[in-house]
Length: 199
Ligand SMILES: [Zn+2]
Image (cartoon, rainbow, N blue to C red):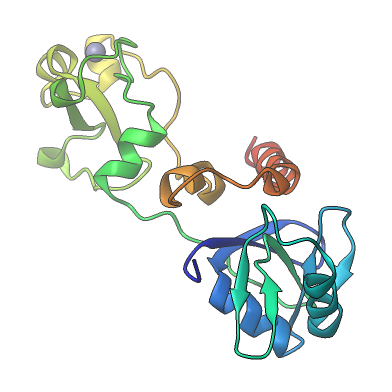
């Protein structure tokens, strides 16, 4: 349970990270972060410990220490200003498939996963790099047709320009189990803010 995810907000209430329960509690103990409860109230460690004693045990998750029990936080907010670098989305096959939604980015078909290939838009043979911006999923027939061409050379068109995905978009694939309902507001807000900036 200590490795479960806790959503981390920065001072502007924007979701910036997910950390373990262990890490979250350690930040709160050090007064570097406060726990945010369901009513958006912020708690330092003493306040959170008191609240943990006061609420009914049923349905809640606790960390037990020899002296007391403490509710598992779901959201914390950092106490200090300071840039928290956004989580980088790992450039790997799983995340490319997820970004492109298991869909051929040329024809829009959704074949079984095994029939999807990774296409370099500017082909490797012509100096194309493996990067978020130069790689898309393609079905076998589109990949064969495209071969060593640029899409525009043979009248193929990408459905959308490929970009590095925002880390929040990969969140639910990273965590075990469902997202916590209390996260949703923060995650939605951050997601849409980022989408606006990118456009
Ligand atoms: Zn295709």
